[in-house]
Length: 489
Image (cartoon, rainbow, N blue to C red; front, side):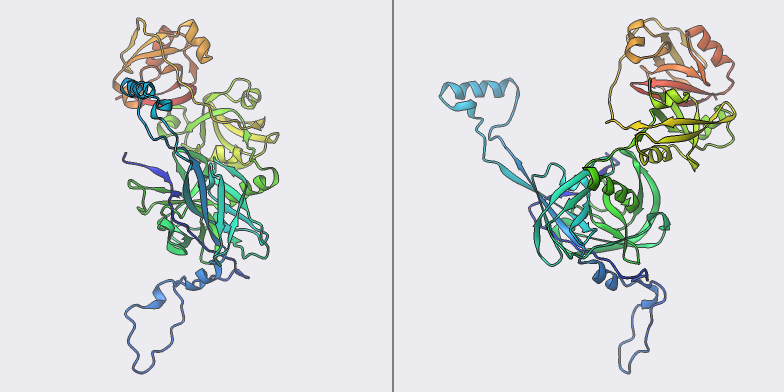
């Protein structure tokens, strides 16, 4: 694969430690451009590098180091001596059973422990810690090793897979702990420091700059990741990302890599996101999030032009769940959500983050653009459910053609309507030309064109002919609905 987003917690047999702590004021530990330089003494060698132009992180590391910890985990696995499958393997098992060898030779070995490692940091003097959820996932035993070499068995208070945040507790008092910073005030280009145990090398410090903010990753819509070029490797997972004041601004979580090692693209969970999750985990052991029940997609320039919008800003509603709060509030496919409770929705990724930070039962004032006018709708949120994955297939039949788009379509069969939960639509049988270039696929169900419902082939053909050279198809693919912009010529 050319692209790989990988969790950085590693499985290894090596114990690891880490480090970190908090200062008493907000004065930066590091002066990157105004260091005091004394005159060289007589006979002293001339410095080869001007120290005033380079940051010195030593004071910061000494201050924060004691609060960063190493986390090691243990899992028990059973490994079979004889592995395989298929007819040949079954024949061998039968042969062995006939000669009195129990279970066809499939004797189980004793449980073999598998060890993992990661990093974390202390957030309170009475022993609460933060790390990544994937560091402690499925662990039967979690051990925390402090910077002073003391070991403690840790209890997992709770973990949240969606944000990759976990809260641990050790039985200790008077511990050093980190100070929290403001992730929203972080600027692209500023220096940051990570402390952790990559590959089991204890107390490793790496530094770099913030490369980007509010970065969207393919597998997660609730976290606006901080991207850095700080060297993060297996074992760094769950460790803190510090600003120059010695404040934690993020939890190192993921890397972008083709090899599994550092390639200059690292991603941290903003500390404000992590702390909101932590508060819920400490209070109830779980995280609840609001849900309104819409399927959304980015509003591209082409789609904005198709809808007659001046700017490509907001989240385009592709589908509305039946019986959902959004449906009850009157939100419709084709609406563009541009605000929630006064907060701007500049792009589609903003909406799930805003709604996800709200609680079930909260009322959300949703600002939408619909056919050139602005409306405000009130939605009472429900609790977010686990994601569902489903797919559908279509039954081939004779198909009329739409030459302008390059589509061959047919009406939905009654059983397909029931299965998909739609009243009408056209199944794409063959695709070429402009529709293929736009990403339309065989098996897609076209349910609308330019916010007009599609009921039959003749009506669809008329809509296509009257839509000029730009149009937006509303397509159902599996359980998801998306608008696909198409440009002719």
